[in-house]
Length: 235
Image (cartoon, rainbow, N blue to C red; front, side):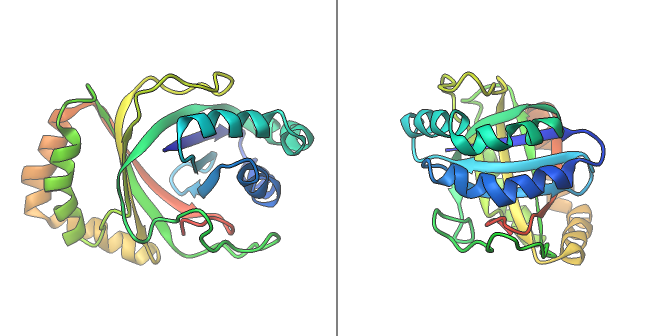
């Protein structure tokens, strides 16, 4: 399972949070049993920081979050991190519907501390807001949307759906929403732009898939276009 977390930050403070996060919070959290899958700059929202944090199961989630947020690393750097944030409650608890071979697993290579070279790659996708957990959305997305996305150069690396479960670390609120989220990787901005061009020109997507996604959604989709930080595994 993963937390998909999106933070709204004070103007100009994103790099401050990323510096603290990449230097201290990656290993600090993983030492307690979490997996820091990826952390990103939102390319369309200059004051948004997005990240994915994984857990093998719910009991480990509770233990790991308690260990980190009541431990020395967070205690030392919490004030600096919190000063950058306006809102840190945009968080969703998800489980994988599909993880491709390119999705980072625990222990995947990660750039060393102190690395500042930001990759050219783009991680993009969307969050669809659904009406219910048993609405057939995942099946429709898998059977119809995934082939259309793949045909336009955006084969999903990961597809997640809401994990309906009680939040076992109430200190970090979770949004009470049913969603499907997907992510794909592009080597650079040009590859992402080409995907968007092909998607706009795709008759299957525009006439069959997209109208059905809109019809099945309870609210407009959130499109994501993200740049991995220097130490993101998902890059």
